[in-house]
Amino acid sequence: MNIALLSFLTSTGKSFLGFVVTILRTPSGQEKWCTFFYDSPKIRLGLRVDNLTDENYYAGYYFVAKQNPRGYAFNISWKM
Image 1 (cartoon, rainbow, N blue to C red):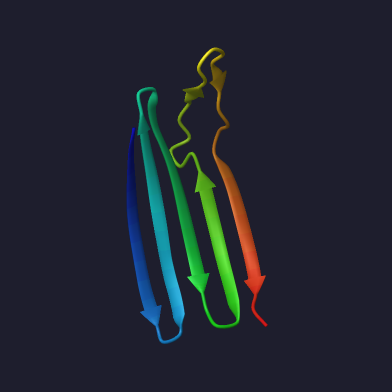
Image 2: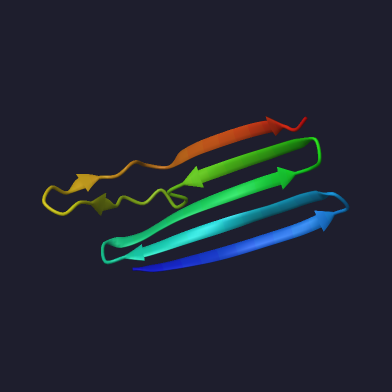
């Protein structure tokens, strides 16, 4: 099993903008996740994409099950 992380981060004063791509290589194939975020002193926005390439993959030892297709998660956080 191999894990690769590709990341990018840029700063504009007190704010940060970046993304991280995670690639998990297993014998059954590759799974890819991606996270984009914007972080400032007052607010943080984030978007996560699971199964980035929307490939079919299976997991299990005794019973093999098809895993979820592409999924999205978005979050907003306010800082006090």
